[in-house]
Every structure is written in C-alpha cells, then in structure tokens.
Amino acid sequence: MQSTAVPPKEARQTPALLGGLIGKILLYGLLFFLALLTLFPFYWMFVLATHAQGDIFSAPPPVWFGDYLMRNYDALLARVPFIRNIWNSVYIALMATVTTLFFASLAGFGFAMYEFKFKKQLFAFVVASLMIPPLLGIIPYYLIIQALGWLDTPRAVWFPGMAGAFGIFLMRQYIASAVPKDLMDAARIDGASEFRIYWNIVLPIVKPGLATLGMLTFIGQWNNFLGPLIVLSSRENHTVPLALRTLQGLIQTDWGAVLFGTALAVVPLMIIFVLASKQVIEGLTAGAVKG
Amino acid sequence: MQQRPGTPNDRAHQPLSTRIDRWQRRAAPYLFISPFFILFAIFGLFPILFSAYLSLQVWNPVQGLGTMRFVGLENYVFLLDDPWFWRSMSNTIWIAIASGLPQHLVAIPLAFALVMGVRSLRHPLTAIYFMPYITSAVAVALVFSTIFGTQFGVLNQVMAYLAQASWSAWLFGGLADTLPINWLGRAAYIKPAISILVFWQFFGFNVVLYTAGLATIPRTYYEAAQIDGASTRQSFWHITLPLLRPMIFFAVTFTIIGNLQLFDQPFILTGGTGGTAQSGMTAAMYLYRTGFEWLEMGTAAAISWLLFLVIGTLTVIHFYFFGRSGLETRE
Image (cartoon, rainbow over all chains, first blue to last red; front, side, top):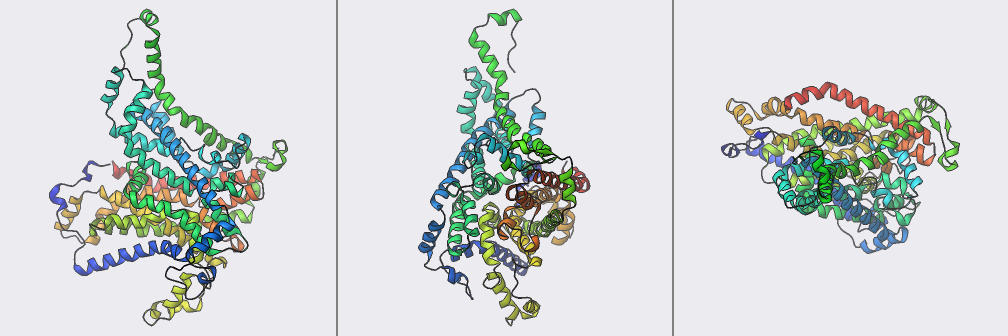
C-alpha cells in the first residue's frame, strides 16, 4: 500500500467534491435505489418463505409476510432431512475453520518470522497455487477420495483444503505486521521451544487476524456446492446447498418449502455479516489490495 | 541469528538437550509450512498431473481401473469436433462478458461516488452491495428462479406494470409485445437471466475492491485539480481512472478467472440440465455432466485442460495488454 493513503488533517476537512444540493439528492437517490435492488431478492425470499405454494404462484404476488411459515417448515422436513443437513454443514464448516486456522497461522508464522533456505521460492509457490483453477483437478479429486474410501463422508470435503494457500497468505501478512521479532528472541532466551512461541505468544497476538480468516473460511465452506456435490451422495450426508438442490429436483417442487430452506441457508451468514461486515470485507479484499 | 558453536569438538560434548534445542530451532519453519506442501502434493499437484494423464485415456470408473485404455489425443480431437463443447465454451464466454463487463462499468463510478460524495453512509451502503457476495450461490439462484418465473415471476410482473402504467409507458411500452418473457425456458433468455444473477451477486465485490483502490489516491490530487478549476467529471477521467488502473487490472483478473469457471448459478437456474438447447450450459457444467453423469472421465479431464487453456490464454492476454502498464503506475 502507498504511504500517502492517509491524507493530512486539513485535507480531510475540505468539503466533498460532488457539490450542489440537487446533485446530492440525485446521488443519494441512485445509491439507495441500487441498495434496494440489492436487498430485494433477500426480502422476497423471506416473504415467499411465509406463503403457500398457491400464493407464490398468483398475480399479483404477495408483497408482505404470510402465515404459512410453520407449514413450509413441515413440508421441508417431509422432503429432506434438513435438520441433519444443517448439522452436516455446521460440522464441515467448523472442521474446515478450526483446521485452517491452525495450519494457516502455523505456516504464516513460519513464513513471516523465520529466515530459511528457499523461503522466497516456497512462498511464491504458495501464492502461485492460488492461480490454479480448482476445476482442473476436480475429476482426480473424486478418484482420490474414492481411493481413500472417503466418499460420502464429511472429511472428503473439509480435509483437502485445511492448509489452504489463501489462509497462509493472509496470516503471513498479518503476523509480519503484528508480531515484533524481538519478542521471539526474548521467548527463546526464556527457553521456549519454537512451537511454544507460536502457541503461547503469537496466537494470542494475532487473534483479530484469526477471527477474520475464521469467518471467511466458515462462509466459504458453508456455501461450497461443487465439492460436496461430487463426493456426498446420500441425502443424510448432504449439506444445506445440496439439500436445496435436491428439493429443486423433485418432481413436485414445493417452492414455499424451498424458499424456507434458502432462508435458513442465508440467515446464519447474514448474522455473521451484520456483526462483522467490516472484518469480512477487509479480509476478502486484503489479498488484492496488498497484492 | 543463533550463536555459533566454537568448534565441531565442542558440539559433540554439548548436552543432548542443547542439541535437540538447536535442531528444533532449525527444523521449525520447515515443519510449520510442511502441511501445505504435503496436502498440496496430494490434493493439488497430483490431481493436475493425473488429469493430464487421464485426458489421454478412455475410462469409465464404474468398470474399475483395469479398463483404462490409452487413446492418445482422441479425447481432444473428439471435443474439438463436438458441438456441445463449442456451445458450452461460447456460452461461458458470453456470460462472462455480459455479467462481467457491467460489473466494472457500474462498480467504478459507484465506488467513486461512495468515496467522494457520501460520508456517513459509505460503510453501510458498501456492506449492502457486498452482501450477495457472501451468500450461497445455490440459495440466491433458487430465489432468482422464482423471480424469473414466466407467469407469476415478480420481474415479469414489474415489467408488465411498467409497460402499461401511464407514467412509465413512454419508456417501457415497447416491452408489452414480448411479455411475459419465458426467462428460463426460451433459449434466447437463459444466458441473460444467468448474467443478471451473476451481476447482482458480484458487483458489490468489485465496489469494495475499487473503494479500497480509491482510498490509496491522495485527496490532495483532487484538491489541486479543483483549485485549477477541474470539474468532478474531469477529476474522475484524469485522476481517478489512471491511478485506479492497477486495481482495475486485479479486479478484471478475478472476474476472468472466476466467471470462466461459473458453475453453481447456471446449474441451479437450468435445473442441472443446461436449459433449452443447452443455451445455459457453461464449460464447468459440461465438464461435470461428462464426468459424473455420463462417466466419461477421460473426456471430462480433457475438457478441464481445454478450459484451463482458455483461462490461461485470456489471463495472459489481459496481462500483456493491461498488466505491465497497470503495474508500472503502482511503483
């Protein structure tokens, strides 16, 4: 990043460049209109989730919440084991998150705080691996999972990505900026092993970075579709997106139930996002901004 | 660094604990970074090499490894002559452009307006634009498939209203003849429908990238321009755009790589089939169906390599034309 990013104080006090009252009203009008367009599908999803199939397919469509929510819930559970599917998603996302936090911070620590042979090349390799399209290895990925006997198990989804390159990159940047090198030497003089330094000293310092990476990993894994689609076959082992796909594929799609399910898929992430949107956004764009 | 031992003789006489300590210190960084390389070797590098090998074979996995048969470039020859392959490729590029280009054309001025014109509401607005990006593509695609409904979809109903209401008929009246649009059923409308969804889901990500890029442009540049009598529009064209070029370069790279691998959204919107006359089938979908529905693993692996070739070529072209100049301004 450029050091000139922070302007001097007097510069920040100058009025905004887009002047004029009319211009201001037009600008805000446009921005709010776009925000409404962005939010509308979410609103629509919640509205339809509370209506019966028959109301959803009527003209004019319902624009306000109905009273069919619980019956849609029952209809959903009658078609797919959705509680089980939510649990599968939570389990896979949590396993991915915990393992990623550990391995990514450990590797990030290695790259940030040590000097060793081929460090530059090895780190360049990690970053370059981010550029490989995941689709390239998708067929052999299935075959490896099959060979390991992991088909239709959760670890087929979370295990392969638990030391992901993006997390390592993110944690390396964070640790390099947050942990002073003197601290390492001080700990060594006290007789701490290298792993102890990581566990007892570095991890507590980089908690904010871990929180960001944790949220990003959880979100990514919660939404993951193609990976689970390939390796998870039975309905009890499906994750939430797969269960939604199953509902859509049934001969008589009950859209009230489908939209109730999509709402359940979206709400947890909305809660995370409302609580920590700044961290999520900054984390996801950190690679590009610093790149 | 660490203190060096005096002579080799000394080292041998050092207590065991000291030697262990020295060893763990030297080995530590390699141990710390090794999980990535082990996992990448198994689940990253090996699959790539194996898919190259597989693309030269004919193989149905149900019949076991023994039935694998070497056929040379036959899979590639077949694909280059396969109308479905070409259709899926051109669909992919069509959707990539139709959904990708508007993302940037909207996101750049939008980010400019947010940074320059809006103070207190900048963060909440950006967060709203960004929200679709973090939601499940499957979930939002299902919501959009109700929005795109022919008879009762809200999009058609809004357009029907706009086409006949007195205040808007002068602008939208022309639509009346084409309504209701069968968005997900008629071949001509499937790609636009997919592109609308993809645009909606990803433009906010680009807004965030560009606001971050704009924050690195010193405000004093704009003030100097203002003193010289430059309008906002002139500032945008002559200060913002040139200085934003590195970020545009990165953002477009993301869009190219991501859009060419589009799978979830077209898969759900077309119910997994690719739609009427395969007009919504992307290359990623064709790859999936070839491998996991028709069990032609060799052909599927060849598709993945051809797709990789296209992604690589377009990325290199993009680097060649925009990368160097983009990176120079960054120095």
